[in-house]
Length: 119
Length: 113
Image (cartoon, each protein chain N blue to C red):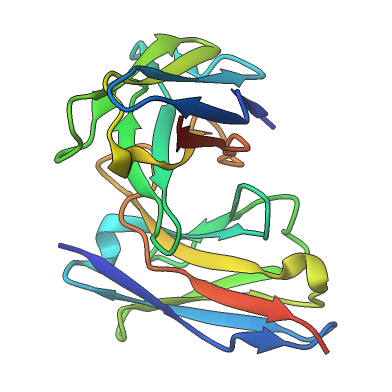
């Protein structure tokens, strides 16, 4: 059973870079498209983008100019970087997988990590 | 982009009663070549990650109780909980995966009356 665990700083200063990592265990990193999804306080879920083990990416246009995803297959992990953050980037950030056997639903999910943007 | 709109925003239902949540997409998510609706439903409880309930609009994920069912096609979809249990209190989201960006609805908060 594939399990995901996010890690990264819980506090980021405005204008700086938010950086998170998700470690994949219990399965092959090549069997999924790996996504990041966030939930801002009082708001719904927002898909940020995905990366495949080959390194190909697909980002939400709403964040594309500030987002970079990367993957390290040797460490079974993938990462998210969001630049020039503002308070609007304060959210619970989830990593999740889109199974290759599916077509775009998200399963599994990490537990989520809270990121606060504040000086 | 496909915009997903859920209704109602919140819902209070008595234990044992039926709960119905609606989801409407701004364009059809039915792929004609395979006649499948690219629509999923999730349950989100405080302090827990979202849980996949339904995919292909009506296929229950393994382990999901059969009181949860999904229906609809094209642009209009429904998640039904046939007999509400206390553990079903949560926020429910629909999500389209017909095209990128993979947008979610705004969520429906389900409570006990």
